[in-house]
Amino acid sequence: MELADFLRLLLRRLWLVALVAGTAALAGYYVTKDDPVEYERSMTFVVRPSDALDSGDIAGVLGELQQDGPVIQSVVGTLNSRRFRSGAAERGGVSEGAAAPTIEATTRSGSDVLDVHLRGRDSEALVPVGDAFAKLATRWVADTYRIYQLESLGAEARPRELPSRQPKVMGAALVGGVLLALALIFLEGVVRRGPSRPEDGAMAYAPHGRTAVYGPGAGLAPAAVAAAHPANGMSALARSAAGDVVRNGAGSGPSEVDDAAVEKRSGPRWRRS
Image (cartoon, rainbow, N blue to C red):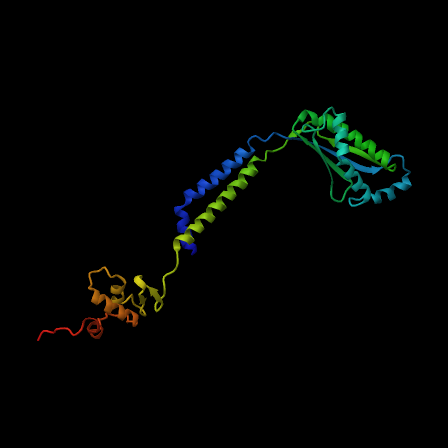
């Protein structure tokens, strides 16, 4: 299918594009319209040498505090564990379940700074759970690593509302609807185009089992047309003779019925003197 043909068909089917895309976007809206509002509270920590260390030991301890080092990875893995989340929720007065916030700890590239994000549907629960989490994490690092300590660099006083996922879902559905409509229009163009016509000199098949020949640079010979359409008023004798002409490969110009073929079927003809 040529590009120009597709564009012409597309202009006539713009209503289909609008219909499919609009339906997809509307479906995305109804899927996300009842999504609950979620809130997030962020806290920042840093792992640093303990205050109990001598000044001469601090340089060696700092060298081990690397993002890919075992200390940082162990701290991050423990803070992301279910045990820590359950303990923080219990001390924050929230029973573990749907209302309990999720907790995610990550490291900043090339540093020993940790970012902790608490997310949940109950904004009031994020503050006490976050405070309890900070106390648990600080105590665990001090008890596990005598030469390190976890220090808080600050936390958001109030949770903030997270943006809804509805615009993203509706946008993705809209793009998918447009692509689907374009595919349907292209398929329609391919189906409507149908098979191509035979070239000059190719064989064509006429009704009633007769073979017609396309001559070079011309249409079907008149005799072939007569043979292909027996209901045009010709006599049975003329149609039979025309069939012989077609089977013998008549040319593209005007053809005459062979007298010998006619006499063979009907006997000698009377001629006027």
